[in-house]
Amino acid sequence: MRHFWITMATLALLAGTARADLTLGLLAGKNEGDVVADWQPVANDLAKALGQPVKVVAVKDDAELLRRFASKEIQIARANTGTALSLIEAGNGEIFARLALTGGVADYRSLLLVRNDGPADFDALLRDKQRWRLATGATSSTAGYLIPAYLAFAKRNVLPEAFFREVKSGNAEDNFRALADRRVDVAVCNSDDFDKLRETYPRDVRQMRVLWQSPSFSYDPLVYRKDLPAATRTAVARFFLDYGRKGANTAQEKTRLYYADQLSGFLSSSNRQLREVTDLQLYFDLFKLNLAKQTDAERTASEKQLYRRYNQLVAVLGGPK
Image (cartoon, rainbow, N blue to C red; front, side, top):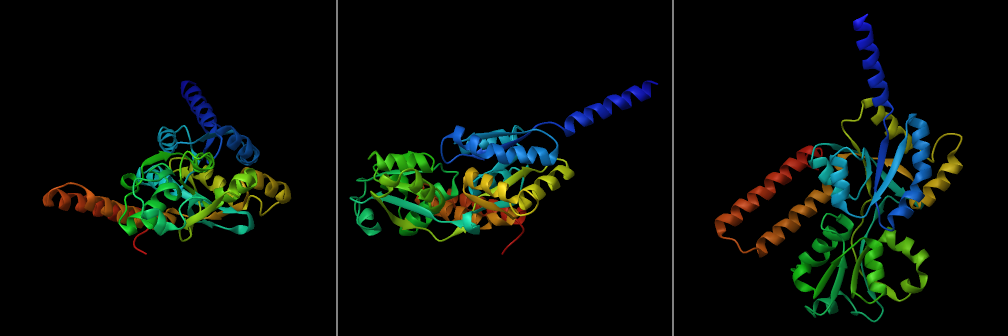
């Protein structure tokens, strides 16, 4: 009889665990409350598909998303590629899908925006060190920081933090508003958020132009915790990959996707999506290392450490190209 009650208690515990809340964490490019409201209908459908509650939280700060994912407060994350790389490197995350925008667009470009009365072109910008003010993304952001920092500036032997008179940090909308309000002269954005901001602030957009744009990069991934039950991971991946594409509610789901983030759906992906990010990180870190005040021995040790981390990441992400 005692064994019977232990078994029943264990089963009850397992049942409670299986039905525990899941939390979908979103990196917000705009007001957090609006992001939660926009995504809640999708999360409600996910809850129905899984048979367990699904909460939505939105954060502006990459570090906060990383912290809450690491502490198991978030089990599924929509992150930028830089943050996703940190989740994978920490050993507790795995990419299973990536976002596709309206029309099936699955990539984006980083942008540098200026007002119409700003520098005439990129060369004109670079002729005036310590004149301009920059609004950029957090250093963990791929589109908001890494891509422009390396491809726009470092490849021209410029370190943004040393070149600009003032550097502010924020998300895409924060940067856009800072430029529109003349609090900065150059703002980092991306093609996806800029299209959305064009709809919200058409008058401000007409006063701006794109000074520089990057090549195309893969759009934001979805990451789930590796320690979720295998059946849950499979169900979560199937839900997102089918959502808006299969089933009787496709039309309604497409509407919800559009209002969530002007999405058309989700594409299958894996950790290998981040290979393009690891290369950029290495090149930019090597550039900064060349500017650092170190002895030759210190520089050699730092360089070896950078390559060691790079090789470890390449292995985790599926090996060389």
